[in-house]
Image (cartoon, rainbow, N blue to C red; front, top):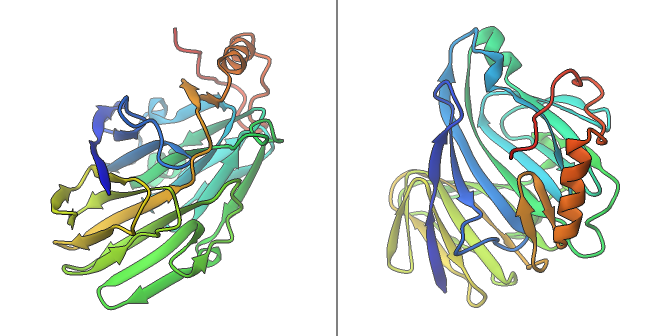
Length: 288
């Protein structure tokens, strides 16, 4: 059953780099374990963009960040020693656990110009795994299974669904897929997850009698498998999973405990969290 339609809230990070925040919203904090969902761009950058557009080193706890690009390149560096660029069709899966810091820099765009377009989501870690050791894993496009049929192409980014299983290691039952749909194509979302959603990156779809344009997410509760149908050529991200329980979110921190978040804030304010090995000369101050 269609429970809610969420419209992204656009904000400019500077220099025309717009991000559309979809999750969380007051009426719907999570979809399965997904607690944060941002649509980045699309934006075209000429060479020589300022460093102020980079995301400087900042911390996380209690979640996994998932970066997935349609266009462009972003350089990732973190406090477990990783340094790797992510490109379209690949996945950077960073598990914060008890604490990690990382930066995301637009170095390729600064040098040569670039188009940046993608999705960054956060997946809350389940009970018993919120404080796991921090880790980072990169998955190439060849690690992610694809499926193609008439009018529909799909890449399973993470989890298990549609007769496929991704190589990406997850911590709770979930699915996350990138779909290209031609007009008239229909996709049935999995029925075996308690919560499901479809986000329209571009184009327009119809589901349960409602039309959704780009920038909107349809959220479905438990029950029968909902169907989304493309009205125009559309790019759609489908996602969901089983709930992991109540989670609090404050800045970049996610936890089942408000006290744990306050401790993380105190640790960052006091500079007790290690900065990325290869990017430790700047940091993002804790917002007041």
